[in-house]
Length: 442
Image 1 (tube, helix red, strand yellow):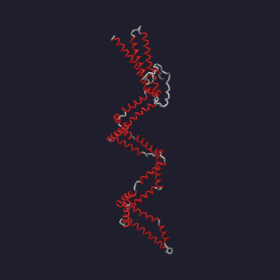
Image 2 (cartoon, rainbow, N blue to C red):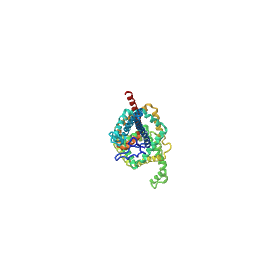
Image 3 (cartoon, helix red, strand yellow):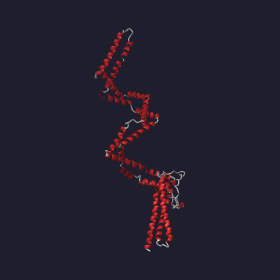
């Protein structure tokens, strides 16, 4: 039920909202628009019914006043009620439309002044809500850091956040283009290695290995490999000796030479391994340390190392390495998105909870975080508050004037009808008081 432009006429059913005018947009609808329309129509009927009752009382009292003199008081009261009710009806109606459809100046204020109202709202919000002092005070009272810490320390929240983080990462990885990511991994690794001189880095690494003669362990390992190779290839060595010896040498001599050669090699390896001061070890130590120094200082050695590095980086192995990294990451993301392993996110969940509990246990750190959050949000909104005001003004400017006026009336119109009721009642009481005062001071 909606009221027409005339104060005493109410239509039989709610009118359908008009379509937005070309070049405009409809303002956001109210969630309970039908309920608000019914409440507004009911209040309009009450206010209009009270005004109609005042009119009936005024007419009856006016007609009977000559025969019943005391009805003059009733007539004066009803007359003032009519004046007050009509004045407030005009004021309320003039906000949303032209009363009785008459072209009265300064009426239909909301439809005609919509753009200016939007600018006023934007400036009001900018000056009274988005200033640094107001924002800082309101944000401080919310104790935002403490709320965040409590939220993080809750196991349910930590579990949900960890799953969302991991799921987001999994979806992001799955959505990345395969060829570009492989190329990016390869280029990133290659560019970093190309920018790093290999020889000095390798020299420093070997110098650490040489500390406390730990590089001798490399020689020990090499000796073990030689001994194992001799033992594993005895038959091959026997065949080599037999093939290389002249045809006229008896087989028994070949076997003897083979055994003497193998035994000598085994004894030599064992002697070097058992004697920490063996000449071979001393020569290995000198050669190892000379190689370290050449890696650090010799231009020729450094150049050969860089050439070797370039050759290795251009090899297919680097491409295979980048592809393998990406395949592993993508496979892990696919497995998690389809069927996450039980307990896989427990460490992340515990870490999130630990952050919240640590903040709650440290009031000073909590206060510092609160100050940081308040300063960041207040500074950000302070910096962009003019843009917020402009956004509000531009949004309101784009609204269709008729639809905006109708929905604003639905939002606040029911409360405005109390102005009409109060105007009728208070007007009548004021008329009564004025009439009685004129009788007293006549």
